[in-house]
Image (cartoon, rainbow, N blue to C red; front, side, top):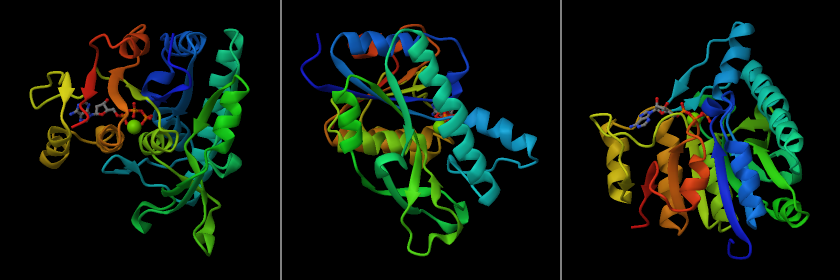
Length: 263
Ligand SMILES: Nc1ncnc2c1ncn2[C@@H]1O[C@H](COP(=O)(O)OP(=O)(O)OP(=O)(O)O)[C@@H](O)[C@H]1O
Ligand SMILES: [Mg+2]
């Protein structure tokens, strides 16, 4: 059994959402063992598909999506709509209880424009976690789409901002003082220059991987956010969500994926 109130923040990559893995079953099992799972999800691949349908070509800078006015509407619709509700329905059909929401609900993520060159991409300025505690207290699993409310004074054209899901997961983990933060992605973990899995990563090694360019694209925000969470005391791992029971193994401290050392 988990220690009382043991919060586990789980980031599910869009890269793993479309495969019929065991992630949602694993989350329900963790909840039955008295853990309190809090889920943040991405949706990169499906967002790209919907954008391409509208003739918008996705662009990324350091792993962050460049989001213009047309793009932000698609991001909100796909992330907080199609993807989020599909996951809630799947958990519900498996007999679980979930509430799907995004960072606008309860003002969970207050955010401002991070860098005008990226468009409507948000930097979280404040996390309001009361609603998450209320949902957990009622026995539901919160599934959060990483959209922030734009608190930039003049709004600059959009009430919403697109927040990288890895960054959002790290911020939620730190606000909730989560015992553990797990990133589920589509690779075995963090890979070194020879594409070999790094089983344990120090904070310094992690920073070096980013600086040297060995960690690229989507791995950059994952590492940045994971390093911050590990430094503030959470157990952090990056694992392959397509591997059956990977999440359970990671929580049971079986060697799987990459573990970020706390110092
Ligand atoms: N050093 C590295 N080790 C492992 N993966 C890396 C590395 N550098 C870059 N990557 C890339 O990072 C990708 C994972 O990030 P990506 O953003 O694509 O997925 P995700 O975060 O799981 O999904 P989403 O962005 O939809 O939430 C891997 O598929 C891999 O291509
Ligand atoms: Mg990503």
